[in-house]
Length: 461
Image (cartoon, rainbow, N blue to C red; front, side, top):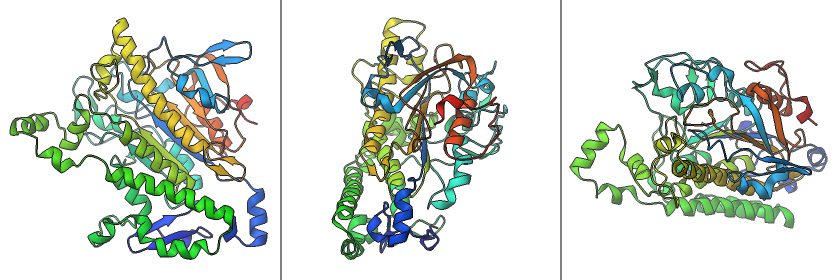
């Protein structure tokens, strides 16, 4: 349970069934304290957005120019933020190489950079703590939630008989230690409620009436009282933030009613779903032509709200599990599922579809950057004070290649990282060198992370 009394100077709006953390508002801070706060940096945040199945290797890398670099076709959606984004070439996770497997050993250890153990049941071993959880250990005590883990697919159990690895490895990139994966939230409504409504695991829920009301209706009396204490500028900040909260709520209310969908499911379809180990809600999302863009953006907006209110400073999001079979035919020009298309066999038609799917992932990443860059803080924007990593554990899905991974990093961590670069490193440079550099950008002292050989000192400012 959230202990709001331990959050120091943090301000909340409270009501029956709601607890809304607020962004920093100088009007609520005593004079001397405000002078110190205004002169210090905003908190630094970190998010990792992971996508499975790699990229079209011919359309990913930027090209160098006399004045910098030109984004590739896949990366074009990032053009509005090119000065705040860096693309890295030559990095690899050396401990992901396996003669047994092409996917699981490149997913579970994406943020640990350690070798995973080959297991076939619920026993798992990722080799070590993940980057996000190491950061959460250092900064998580200052927030309501030490870290948040979101995704689109539920974690699966059982053994993938094709490679002899438990499927549990394909459903998480966050590990509190080598044998303890973090659970993920895949339902936007549950993610929103956990952020803005009191939540106690194992306890009975509150009476249903509060859950039928907007959280803003539940806290409106507290909000009115607060507004009387604020200056004009902070009133505008509060209004902008609460409007963003309500916007997400409205979009959640407009999502398709699953009960209506269930009524259309025949007994034969239910039998097939059981055979495929798919729940009805998952099948509804995996069915041909089902667009998951809105669900993805809801999850992204909830992450942004958490960062904006400082409810959390660390988050991860998985676009899909290993060997994701998500059908992307909702995108014009795509006919089939992600994993099959990634095994393109150098067929130009398959490669074109692969590129379209890759570009969709970049567009969602760009959406998050746009939202964060629009939120002003005292010393820049929310994006400026963050590090938002995007990547996949393999490069080319057809070859399961772990070399030259597709890695993008946005935000300067409050001016600690240089941005707007296309950095080309020698082949097989350790990805964990970048992770160690990011730890230093968060002012976390570490001599080494996983198999790192040092920081990228030229990136630090």
